[in-house]
Length: 177
Image 1 (cartoon, rainbow, N blue to C red):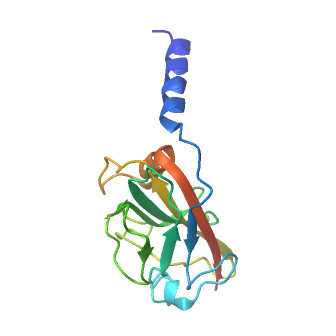
Image 2 (tube, rainbow, N blue to C red):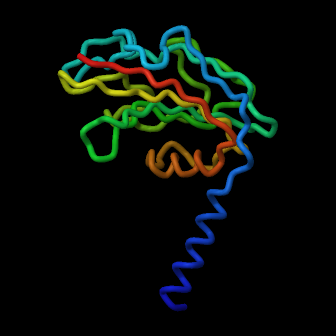
Image 3 (cartoon, rainbow, N blue to C red):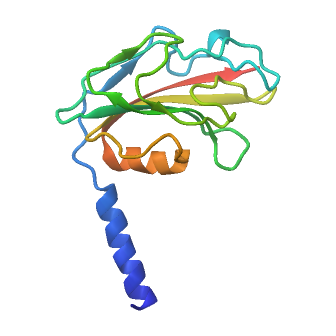
């Protein structure tokens, strides 16, 4: 097989894997604890790395999942981290389709990956002093239960979530110290 043919075949397979059904307009993520563009409270700040916080997951609720939703994924990502690849604060998936909320500080019913602090589960905000960082809290309605486990990388899980997302909703909060 020639290199050109192999690359064309790979591009076709990747495009097919990433094809998603039409997105629903109704999925909405809400929280009494965080708001779009607003500063996170210390409850949701990491405890360590020079930060002093409660390291709690905020209360999250979602509604309007599209027909065909089989599971949910929740991510918290900081695109402003000075790493070259951002910072994953939380990556949870295979949350059952009948779950539509998560109380503050509660464990999620699903699989949680190792965050970029090196611990399983949620790790709160902790930007370098003097910097304002964005924290993207996103819920994805998935058309499947992902056939991966908690040993995969955030990048692979992200690919699988995005390839199977029927709809998503994000609240972007900020934090500075």
